[in-house]
Amino acid sequence: MKLTIAFSLLLAAYAEARDHWVVTWAASPAPQLPPAEMRAAKLEFDNQTLREIVRVSLGGRSVRVRLSNAHGKQKAEIGAAKIALRGEGSAIAAGSSRALTFGGRTGVTIPPDAVVISDPVALDVPALADLAISLYLPKAITGAGVHYGAQQTSYIGAGDQTEASSISDAATFTSWAFLTGVDVLAPERAGTIVAFGDSITDGARSTVDANKRWPNILATRLQTRRKRLAVVDAGIGGNRILHDPAANMRFGVNGLARFDRDVLSQPGVKYVIVLEGINDLGHAGSSAPESETVSAEDIIAGLKQMIERAHQKGIKIYGATLTPFDGTPFKGYYSAEKDAKRKAVNDWIRSGRAFDGYVDFEKAVQDPAKPGVMKAEYDSGDHLHPGDAGYTAMGEAVDLKLFR
Image 1 (spheres, rainbow, N blue to C red):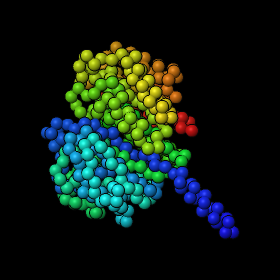
Image 2: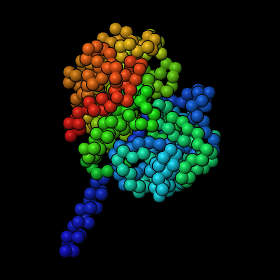
Image 3: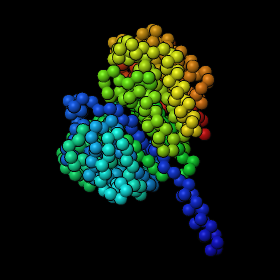
Image 4: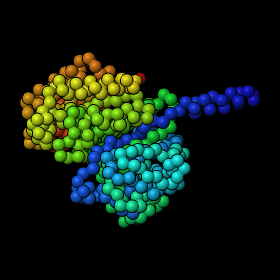
């Protein structure tokens, strides 16, 4: 009997030792905007608490948080930080608040462009749960590590309200600042799928606070089938593979520049789905100079770079076909020539020459009668971005057999 108990304890200890950290939520940061725009976006802080709301994918019983001062021009002082299960609005679930520490300290100073990881805390986080992460910023600072297109309401309160059950007199904002990742401790077989892309991955024009981005839909499908896979959204609205933004810093640095930070450095990544290139076509002659015009071959060369870098890390990488955009009202964004390049890129993705597989998002959302146009019921109204129904169709189009 004693031998049986000892053996069971040994097995349990061995299993725990093989657990590893897996990113269950993440957001990709973009550079800071000019001061007036940062102020208008409620991204200048002074003696305030941010209570930022995020939806995890995979659950766990031990959690840690990653804070980022990416693109910051000054050190960021975090006076206190807490994590909790979210209640309603800015409220947290009773009894769920946990203090976050950094090397045992309750506060941390983040150098410019650096990342810090909190100490692990015990918190039973269900799959697909909302978390409230509270950061107290005691000194005047401009937000950094910012993801501008959150499609999620978060809260700002005066003073240190990290311990408050809800934020009193809260102002709201729809970005994530200083918060870049949440990890859970998970069994060895668990892992993460990174959805890497632009606004169509970021969920632009989906319903705010509804978690209707296509990566959310995929995450729900995986958790319903009890698969131990997280899905994180590394989309940035306006992002391009080959060029930095011409003017709007919200668009983030080019995809090749951010691929290491937003994909390869994430803990527990096993797979990546790349949906990017439509802005490389559309922006030139629209929001970017004509001199930044690219060919289908240029986009393919950029995708090949991502494939090589993912394979070096043992990560499987799947290409996603570019969705239709005929009829978009953005001046200069669409042309028949640009659409021909889109189709050439899609043909290459489907050919199986380089990716480990592909997801046919074009087929999922196009109008069968007019293949260059998005189906009306899937269109958000701008003929470029899907609405909630379109994102749902995309999330359901991903073949789960890709993740064996």
